[in-house]
Length: 259
Image (cartoon, rainbow, N blue to C red; front, side, top):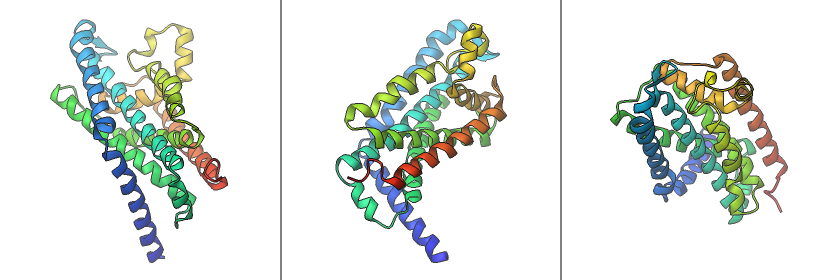
């Protein structure tokens, strides 16, 4: 039993390290770009917009906006990591080597997902360091902060795997990000409180899962929350289990993995 666990650990470690090495070959694209994007958001909302709005929800505007900026870059990075990694392995026929290697389908799904989580954490850590230099970084609940960062990275790593399986061309890799993820992130309370919206928009926002992502990490960082945190926690855990089960099933049946 011990030998099996050791072998499994070695396989998983080798897979994740090799996947991340591919990512680190283009650090400007994978790390510097989201850091620069976050820096621009902080400058605009902290120095320009924030100086006029002052406070929102009882906290400085930039402190209100920062968790959303952090979350958007984390989930986008996790999504891009797994979607591009799996797609290029399919495109270059490297996936065939993985399918004949001594990996279980569960190990493959977990390995890809861990790579996405690590990239999300690296991007989030860089943004947090930038926020420290501007004096706007803070964490009220450390455990919850890491839970939301890891959990949301896992959700979008799994979504990235689905797109990596589904995509038939390079252009399709960005379809979900452009038409679903980014709009829902911006409409999920990233820049505004719930009570600033008309009643119909409040109802739509409460059905937007990104609202609970943003609100959860905002609570972890500032102590300010609008949503039901328990409901958000259950929803996030449910999404991980459902998406994980779907992706594992698609790997198991070889959907777009086998000729």
